[in-house]
Amino acid sequence: MRLVTRRQLVGTGLTDGAGFRYAEAARPTEAPMVRREIVDTFRAQVEGCRKAGSELTARLMERCVSELESEGALARLLEDWQGQPLLDALPQRVVGAVQGLALEGRAPELARFYPSMGGTPRWPDTADAFARVIERHAAEIRPRLDTQVQTNEVRRCAALLGGFLAAARAGGLPLRLLEIGSSAGLNLFWDRYRYELGPHRWGDPSAPLGLDAEWRGGPPDLDAPVEVASRRGCDLYPLDVRDPAQLRRIESFLWADQPDRHRLLRAAAAGLPPEGAPLERIGACEFAARELASPARGVATVFFHSHMWWYLPADDRKELAQRLASAGAAATADAPLFWLRMEAPGIHYCELRLQSWPGGEERLLARAHHHGRWIEWLEPANGE
Image (tube, rainbow, N blue to C red; front, top):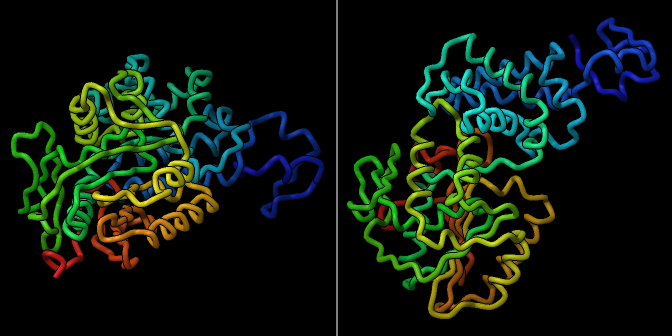
């Protein structure tokens, strides 16, 4: 069945170009109407999830497309949803809402197919169970679609590490960490993890949380002396993962056939200090305006973020870039500023970039998998 918008249907009496004719006001009352943009966004996620290594999620996205096009329970659920399906990550919100019910023990018929909960996928049974959960729990799923996706991928620290080490070497001072879009703030504690980056090692061998990644290229500056003087983050919706319900919320967005991501999240949450992560509920621009208002003497300020830039409105991105440039112009040798970001220039990988002041030099340090599974280091060893 071809899906069209209500505006296309109501009052036209015209065909849609493929021979379908609609009577005024009749068709919209008979079946749920879902915007074509929503269907296309789900369809695009099929190959995206598959390329990112989640066959289970790719197949669930295929089932979502089928449900939308056949005017099933998902179509009824999304009939009046008015957000931006791509920028708001609607497909991930749907899959996360359903997995959240399974994590709460309220969808055992689906949990038995999810490896993250000890299950084994079986097709088409997994997709059928997924669709039944949507149909039976639609009233509970719908409000969950109004909350943003948060994953707090700890393994991204495997890529960010090289940037922090480069800043530590260049600044020659203890680091003052400022993170925007922190989610639960787990990446603020990158220096407390141990790393196995191909043949390279960094961190305390006895650290309870270890992060591994496929490594390509030479090593980063692993011998750079590092001391973290302070750490602070912000998020519009910060989460305290010491609360089991908030931990489940993050876990619900991690793909169910990648149990290692679930394991790392739980381990990082368990390793938080008793007082939790130093987070506040505040927008990125307001946070930057306050924290970058004047140079911080005796520390190297590292303003960083990962996989969140594209969620910001264009005006906010422009304002943040301007604030960083303005703060950079005031930076000195005893109050340097670094802008470290791990963001995606496209759909296939992220770039790790570091800009430093005084001077404003920007360096492309590495390319990396969105979740940090592989890293291609591009800088010469020790920055030579």
